[in-house]
View 1 (spheres, rainbow, N blue to C red):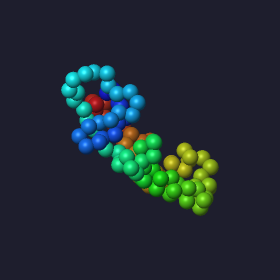
View 2: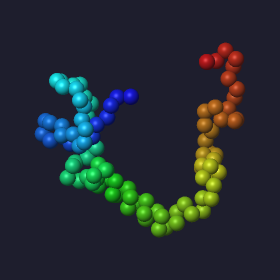
View 3: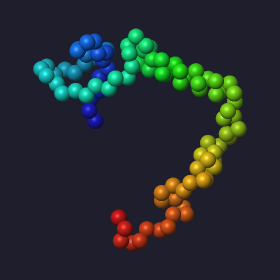
Length: 98
């Protein structure tokens, strides 16, 4: 697994939060933008994270999933309309199949 460091992109420079890579000289990097620093809390989730937390809070207040007493049984019930590959009713593979 590649090493991962948290940083903020300022113009054309990365400013590392905490420890950055120890190598000197040019490094090949891949940057994934997770949100604007002005939007974000320290966890980097920003506005989208707050919106998701608000939505989950509203669902909790509605009691949407209170009738789910066994999550495994609930998942089996909602998936009953489609068969998953390799499920119990799938036809057996021929002996020469990979």
